[in-house]
Image (cartoon, rainbow, N blue to C red; front, side, top):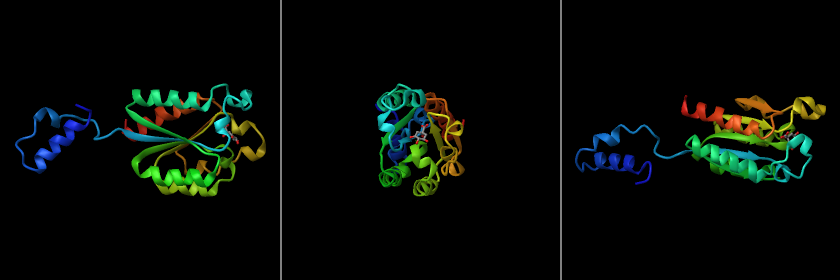
Length: 179
Ligand code: DQA
């Protein structure tokens, strides 16, 4: 039997009056379904592994996403990765997926510095958002030092490479599960 199925059965039997629910099923403390975390990558991040490795590291986006999905399994979270080079496409994704999600990790790429529509879309979800940058944006050109996303994010991790994403997932897991 799949995780969660027994809980649904227990609720149905109560609602439909089909006998007393098995008391063992009422002690389960896991949610009805695994919580989703959206991991969003903005423009040019599809080029990870080929872009300047001294700034962005040698891992490809696929490798980073796989690591996060593995970590998600350990944390009992469903990690849903998404990348686009287009602000509107990212906003469409956020609008359609956020109602089923518990939190968002986002590296907005250069949209960090001017993506007001992206910022509004993230804020409108009401979800906890963690902003991640592979490079230390505060130690780079002046235009990169300003994030228009940061004020609506729970926090920002910048300059720790791919480990910034895994740190963000660990922190967000604690926040969405209230632990
Ligand atoms: C970046 C930093 C941005 O300034 C840049 O435009 C990127 C990547 C980072 O992860 O360090 O595309 O978000």
